[in-house]
Amino acid sequence: MNLSGAHVVITGASRGVGAALADEFAAKGARLTLVARSVDALAAVAQRTGGSAMPADLADREQVDGLIGRIEAAHGPVDVLVNNAGIDLTGAFMDMPMTDIERMVQLNAITLADLTRQVLPGMVERGGGHVVQVSSLAGTGTFPGISVYGGTKAFVTHMTAGVRLEVKGLPIGLTVVETGLITPTDMADSVLSYPPTKASFRRFHRLGLLADADVHAVARKTVHAVEKGRRTVRMPARAFLFPMLTNAPRRLVEMFLIGVPRRTDG
Image (cartoon, rainbow, N blue to C red; front, side, top):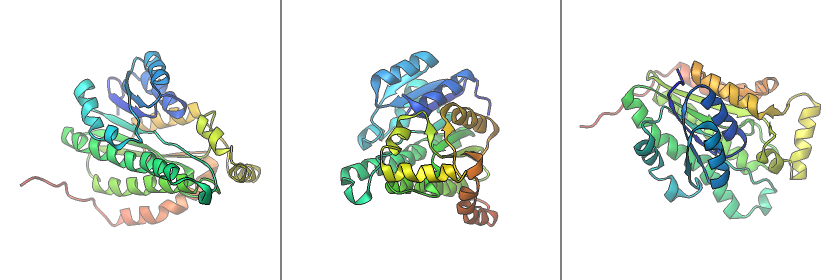
């Protein structure tokens, strides 16, 4: 995909990976619509990248409902949707308030599914588009303290695999981003604030099975994947075996399927 002039929507764009993605897409000449809850931080990223800020709390279902339609009415058809918004509230599952669990599931899974559902029909009708789903290696192998977060990311990866089958044969790209801990980010600070989770990461680092992923490198590889139509971004490369083992049954199923015919009215 040629990103020059393409309309790219990035959720969770006020900081961390989202802000780095905004910089990378802007450098390719894309037109940006940036969505996040933090008004001031979002405005700063929009000013830096020449994008349009659309403040919204994506954990609020009412604000998510019809969001893509409002964006397209204001800024034109969406060529690329980057579902990056997410939260990780780390802690012991038994001690975690149900409100925290509900917020993680809503933002990380339900909102992502809803925005994907909202954007795809227009892409199919126009004959092209790309959706980036920011998942995590935690969706493949989780650690103590991030059980709910890991569950939501497993949903993201598996759901996207199913959607990919439904649009097979159509000019729609789907990229899943699976990384370990991304630094420096607020989410990394949150993850490492819970001692059992921090100890688990340290053990995997000592074994050489994981390494921190740089936020700017993740952004660059993700934008490159959109340009080249690649289905996955995985960092660090040394952890490739875990998602490959998990994805093997999905890929085996894909070998025997040819896609689902597009539904028509009438």
